[in-house]
Image: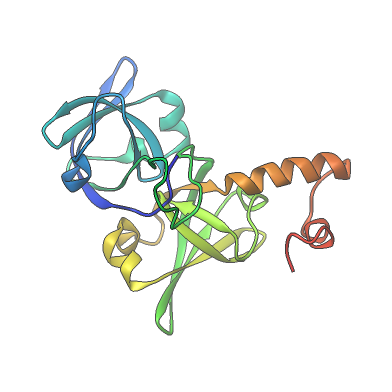
Amino acid sequence: MFTGLIETIGAVRACRATSAGRRIEIDLGPAAEGVHLGDSINVSGCCQTVAQLHGAVAAFDAVPETLRLTTLGELRSGGRVNLERSLAVGSPLGGHFVTGHVDGTARLAERRRQQGERLWVFAADRKLLGQMVPKGSVAVDGVSLTLVDVGESTFSVALIPTTLERTTLGGLEVGARANVETDILGKYVLRYLGAAAGGGLTIEKLRAAGFIE
């Protein structure tokens, strides 16, 4: 379990194909402190297990399912990734509950300037959008963000200067893909209300049930 509060940006040292999928080596930097073999690290939104550890450089094995659903297959030596160590019991939860189980990817469609913040607009599949609500939480490349708006084909998030400086989202170019994990608590609500409604769940049903205004 993670919070979506990125600790540092790691540098990809090497990537190579293996019989199990893909071996990815990443310099964890300060996030290497206290890390052991078998630990879970959130790598740009994907929960990965430390398979080897040499100093601050950790190796991860991304299996075919992970490569299919995420952007880890696009990583190259010299690339940058967001890193967060798993949440310790008793630690402050400053973001939201993030599992590191990516639901799919979205493509950055537009970058807007808006007063003291930036608004990033992503194009996404309707299935992903159906699990989002305005002012709800979403993890984009592992970063906990608040949804500003959710439309029929896009969603938008607001990024403050700190997020732009301390994560890879500040350098994300229009057209690039990002890993997306919707709020796990919202998924349970969606499943429950969908079953209770005896059919598809809509914004109107969520509003009638008091989950949104």
